[in-house]
Amino acid sequence: MKTTAVKMGVIAMLCLSNYACKQEKSLITEEPVGSLKSKSKTSALTCTQQTEQTDYSIYKMTSDGYRVGDVAPYYDEATGKFVIYYLKDIWDDATNNRHPMYAFTTNNFHTYTATGQIIGSSSATCAQDNAVGAGSVVKSGSTYYFFYSGRNNNYLSCGGKLEGVVRASSSSPTTAFTKNTSFPTITVPMGQGYDENDNFRDPYVFLDGSTWHMLLTARKNVNGTWKGVIVRYTSTNLTNWTHQGVLYDGGPTNYFNMECPQMVKLGSTYYLIYSDQQNKYMYYRKSSSLTGPWSAPTSNSRFEGNGFFAGKIATDQYGDSYIFAWTQILSGHTDSGSWIWGGNMVVHKIYQRANGDLAVTIPHTLQANLNTNTYSLVKSSQWGNVTNTVPGTQSYRVISPAPQDVANVIYEPVNQQKYKISAIVRYASSSKDFGFMIGACDGYNNFYSLRFVPSQNRFSFDKTAHGSITSTTVATNDVPFPMTANTDYNVEIVVENSMVVVYIDNVAALSCRIYKAQTTNWGIFSDNSDATFSNITVKYP
Image 1 (cartoon, rainbow, N blue to C red):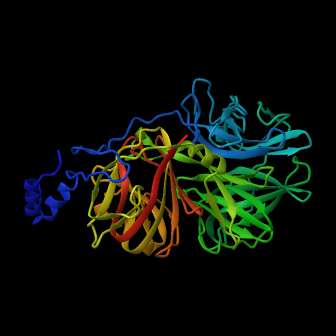
Image 2: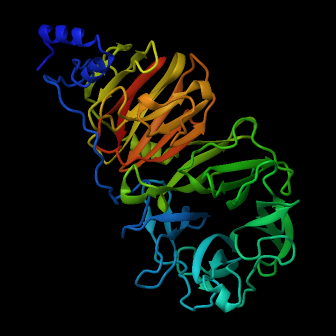
Image 3: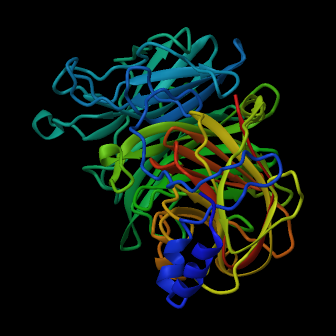
């Protein structure tokens, strides 16, 4: 039923207590505006996560329920498709496989075709590839070569090394590769200060001029300090490789390991990309030379958060470049779970900005697919100083005058398995934050937030109850994003099951695992800020 005059009087009395007022927020349902469907009575908010699904088409995992890890994209000009190799999250299953290599193919990033097994782990006790690790594919002549990490878990009893680089080859990029048993395994250089018992993996091979180069993850004693380093090898024939020493040692930063390194040249600039094994952030450096020196980007050293791991770039025949990575699952498939290796593949379009820094946006083919249909939004409620700025559209100015006096608009759950929320966001002032609510149990505290934090020039995902967030709260996930008042920012939020990927103004992205994202109430909010959200729309394939 609608709020009566008697009830409003009771509310006014209760507002002598701030707590009572906060509780009443979830009881009052405003009349929807514009073309929204009318709600004649109040209803409880839905904020319970759904059971995790496995039917992903945008953020791929395997059709038989396994997650993916460490990807290696390759663009096949013969077919006009990307082949994305990945480690299948199998470890000692019934077939005794340990991270076998499989692949997907696509030319649009919303429809994928799976291949069979590309490379399996060896069943031989002392084989270097007793387990398979990350690698990369190159083509020379008519042959495709796969350089990958071999991990011999029995190396102590076998008298070998834990990690080394091995090779396989094929006449086709999508059929099983044959292991080149005569290829001389590349293992850590001895007596040169490297960790000789571990951490020598993730080969990335590329051609520059007439010389092949290989980058590797390693650890080394650098001037008395153990650091993660990126090592370089060179070759003229893809068989015999010469150690060229450390390409990059992290400079002033001591990374434990710079995993899955890659070097790509876009225009006249070389980019060195790597993922910090400990904090899970992917970083990059740039140089005018293949051998450095390497400098940090002009603005931000990363364009993604900690849910986009081991990113690798590949470029198609049209000159469009894309970066591929994966977002981890959480134990128990709950938002309170801990980080677990393996997850869903994520792809961004990547490009150079005018200053040479890298930026990401949604792939245009995925964008077109998601924009097929328009979803009819239903507003559940609103609270505080909220103004519909353009009648007939979902456009609101949301003003909060003080900390924790949250103004909001809450929508009913979107009844689609995959969809995209879009809005133009700007702010006139902000002393705390504003943004989007996910899995809202109420509109002022008990919700996850995808929020702009202007005072810290970042966009973040927080699972912390909003009323408990302070300036020192460590975000669940975040990405640097400098912002200024009275500027329009384009925001697109792609949701598929528990995958939530946010694109911020076609510059940065934030890939998140949010199990409460699907079939729950969501909305917009402002806390001690004056923000406007224009043309809020939901599209779906």
